[in-house]
Each structure stands twice: as structure tokens, then as C-alpha cells.
Image (tube, rainbow, N blue to C red; front, side, top):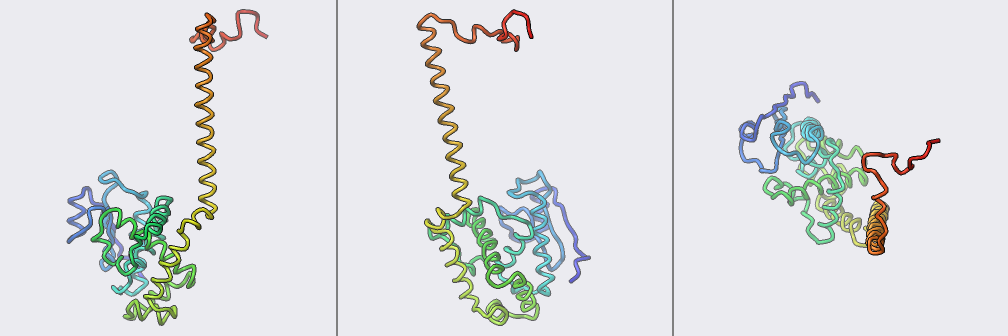
Length: 259
């Protein structure tokens, strides 16, 4: 595997970027990997809003190049595997991604793995879900079939195997069965019951309760202070602030000798 011919193109604007990418490209895309040319094309920072840190985007695109070289330039790698591998390379899992997958699971709107091959035709939110599912499917592959599963699959793709042949010959599972297992696992992990049993969510909920409790207590304290001021004015007593010289931080000490 040799990436010594890799080139990186930094486009100064959207038009320049699209010209370098060539052909149809989704409007939400900010970078592209032309694996067969060993070329990464990026929009320059500041020319377009990135949803991920720039370094993560670069890592993502290099992930595509690396997997392409690993698979011997095969074009038979499923899109979800390609994107999932690249997202891991770019460290792109976020809390938003977790919530997006949970919402899709709970609402029954998960996108089938095979449909992810058409991700470039998806709109923004559906595309974001497709990438999130790709990341989660890659995680599932590693957790259940070994951390070297992608290397073994890439080796099968490099000799011309289809996804169906590669999954059966390398992992001993039919491709459709793997997809069904993954979707069932997502629905199990992101059910209403599992969400309440998730330690991270429980701690986040407790933290939210603490913040809300502090805010309520703070508001009550301010309201009590406001009422005291009103009562003092009704009774003819001077407001506390009248004892304080706003230009003198030490005025509260009085005019006597300081110890």
C-alpha cells in the first residue's frame, strides 16, 4: 500500500471546489476524496461553514484514500463501510450523532444499510443520519466480528468479491443478515427503556436537574430580595445601596480606623 502520490487541493471558494470535484456533488459537501487519483479536495477554511473541525474533515477524507488502497482499488466496498471507516479516521462521533440515531430508532426512520449507497442524493438531515448510521454500523462490525474485520473484508474486496461474497466468505454471515442484525441492535440499544438505563443519559439528566434547581433557587432569592426592598421603601427605610458609595469598594467598612 503506497500513498506517496497523494495530493491535497485547497479550493478558495465553492465554484473552484466544484470545478475541482467535477460532476454532481451534494450542496452539503465541503470535501471530497478522489481515491483513484489519490487526491483530496477541500474548501479552504472560512469559505464555508464546517460542521466538524477542519482537522477531522482532513482525517475523514484520508480515511477514504487509505481504505481504497487497502482494498486494492476495489469499487465494491459498501458506502456505509467506506463512510464508517472514514468517520472513525476523522473522530466524528458527537452527542448530536447519538441523539440523531436515537430519534431515528425511536421514530422508526432508520435508513437501511443498502440504501446508504445513495447518500449523495439525500438531503441534509437524511444525509447526516446516513453518516451517523455508517459510523454505528462500523462500530457494530468491530465489536461483533473483530477489530481486524475491515482489513479481512478489504482483502476480499481486493480480489473482486461482492459484498455478499465478502461477508459470507470472511465473516460467515450473509450480508443481508448482517444488516438486519445491526438494525435490530440499534433498535434495542436506542429503545425508550434502554435510554433510561443508559448511564451517560442518567448523569446528563441529573446534571440538568442540578442546573435547573440552581436557577430556580437563584430566581427565588432574587424575588425575595426584591420584595424586601419594596417593603423597606414602603416603611421609609433606606435602601441598602444608599449606604454604599459605588465609587468606593471599601465604603462598607465605615470611616473609622482600619485594622
